[in-house]
Amino acid sequence: MPSVTEWYRQLSTMAGYRAIAWQKQVEQIAYIFQANVAEYRRFLATLQWRGSVPPEMDVANPDTLEQVLCECQRLLHNVLTAISTRVDQLRRFVGHNFAADESIAIEYRARVNSLIVGDVAAAFLKNLRNHLTHVQLPIVLSTETINTGSIASDDLDLV
Image (cartoon, helix red, strand yellow):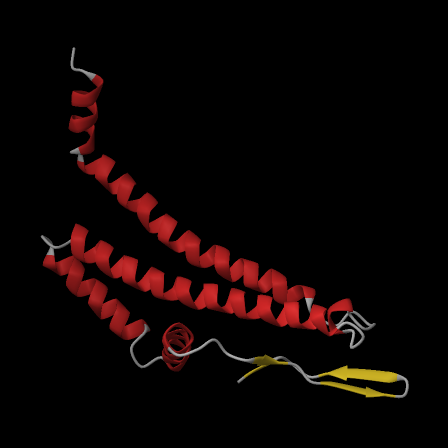
């Protein structure tokens, strides 16, 4: 009877085992991105107008607004960095695991080119991520207008 170590070595060389491991790796790469996007969306949903002045927009407490804007920056940074991480890891994954099968690598590059290259939104997100990572975090501003009986808040702006 083979040892556990020998059994595991034999198992890990089987094509099905490798395919399941690859699938799990791709799922983990996707999870990082999806979880960051979900967290950012939940945060933004808390800032939606609720019919009264939200506590985070109360001009009597500017520190709270500052905290909200800082959290907005942090979450935006996480989403944009997760995009880059996903691209880099998938590129490495395909190159490492399918180097022997050039047809898969060719198909992967063709799909990337058809879906990403030339896409305005993808280029914008890539440039924004590069700016955030290599130049500076955006300065997040919010403008409130207070009149007798009404308060209006513009959308958050990135400068």
